Image (cartoon, rainbow over all chains, first blue to last red):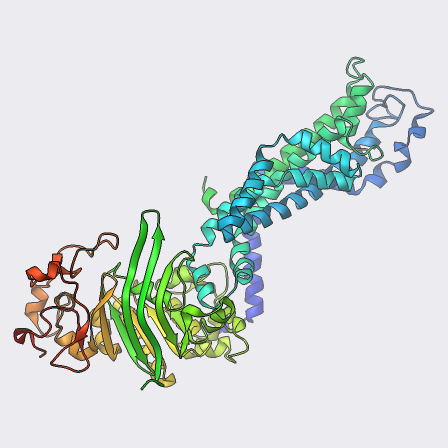
Amino acid sequence: MSDSVASISPRGMTWARRKRALARVWRELRNDRSGFSGLLILLGFGLVALCAPLIADRSLLLAAAGRNNPDLAGPSAKFLLGTDDIGRDILAQLVWGSRVSLFIGIFATVVAVLIGSLVGLVAGYVKGKVATVLLAIDNFFLVVPFLPLAIVLAVILGRSPVTLALVIGFTSWAGSARLVRAQVLSLSERGYVERARALGANSRHVILRHILPGVAPLIIANATLIVPGAILTESTLSFLGFGDRLSPSWGKLLDGAQSSGSITLNAWWYYLPPGLCIITVVLAFTLFGRALERIFDPRLAGR
Amino acid sequence: MIDSTVLKVRDLYVTYQSSFGPVPAVRGVDLDIALGETLGLAGESGCGKSTLAMALLRLVPPTTQISGSILLDGQNVLTMKPGQLRLVRWAQASIVFQGAQHVLNPVQRIGAQIDEAIQLHHGSTSSTVREMLALVGLSDTRADDYPHELSGGQKQRVMIAMALSCNPLLIIADEPTTALDVMVQAQILQLLDNIKRERGLSMLFITHDLSVLSHNTDRVAVMYAGRIVEVGPAEELLRGSIHPYSRALAESFPIIGDPKSRHQPKGLAGDPPDPNLLPSGCPFHPRCNVAIDSCKSIDIKLSAVAKSVDRQVACVHANDESRSVK
């Protein structure tokens, strides 16, 4: 009400407040050593994936590319990470593989989070018979052996990266549905939800205006924790030979390493780099996700 | 007379479903509120006053049974379809909730929350957030604040602004001044009173604080164990209560200028009865100091008092000479 406050426009104040809120998240993330290092690692991998064409030409991935190279040669100046069983550069495959692995990991997570949030919102808000049915389906997906289901779906739906991501997303939403439902149950008892009903709001309005904003931070934090699972699943499916034959993912590299006998031949440059990449990215996502969870979830604040 | 009645409640029963079985929270209540009139509804915690208020707009859990009739501006709320009910909510009757800090969404700006009501009924109102804030004495820079940036009194003003935003006929004020200090309480009561007079609104004012009712209300109804035990003009009822329960309520407040009452505040022993285990006969008899044997068996109904045309009391002693209206 003083002059200094009145001279700033409402819009300007809103922006200032948003900036402050973002700055708070950034500051807390900076202070969270493990979460911040996770973020840095992810940014590094993201950069490599985006710049793949600059690092290695795509033609290096073709079977013909290795025709004139030595097979299963160890690291050298020409091939920094050696060659595979048909003479192709492993570094090139690793770099291009990061694209496939990250794409499938993130796209599968988007699918899982969309299904999980929708089921969780409805099951938490509607209650009654609809909720019972949804929770039964949710329980089914929680307890059903995950890998056989994913394999069956992958075989039925085909093997492009997109269908693979859909399969992984479709089989990993159950946990986030539970999480969202629990939060919705708590939010829908709040006073402002009752007020919104008294205002004459319908369920759609109450959900979009009051409940979804309350669960959104939880959904975001949960999503970063689903990504590593999705990347591991993609690797598993590819390793088992259910991946896309044409696109080079880290899982497919491992599959190649295993079937070419590189382990018995002690060709460590074939199986070690993709394995390390998978572990590092999964770890980085987990560290980053845990940090976001700590920042966004008030129940974990100060722990 | 009939035409000017904004709210007409007849034989209202509200029964909650719990895991222990049905819980009767409101048991046969009749209420009338005329245009421009304020009815005070008083009683202890748990006597059913908030349940009654919420039931007026059917804001009770879906498993709750409601019977009787609630005529709001001539339309029966209990038989409305959901869409029609949503239109009536807030546009015909709005609520000033107790505990504004819980009722405002902590992560939305004040202006957006007032605007929410306006947007939901945009066909029927042309109010703006700015007008509404001015009406309750808040600067319009407040529209961009979050609830935690406001004091308790300011939050309650925001609730009042919200309640007025759709030009309702009736405002249900559900303990609007609890959790506010006495100075702010007085400001909020004054504000409600001014707005009510300016706009010719009717109000149902719910409180456990009888001292609040004497200045603000035309008539007062006292509720006990889900029923109205005494109703009458505010001044008359507060100065000369007939029902022993309303008398106990009135006597629990000191009277300014009477030092004796300050040094000997009178309370009422015991707790209000559990709605699941209501005493037989008159539900008040276990706590009543003038109960007679017949009180244990006869459940006495609200009926007119011989001394005054406007008053009704549910007590066997209602027409005793010794307890006449002063």
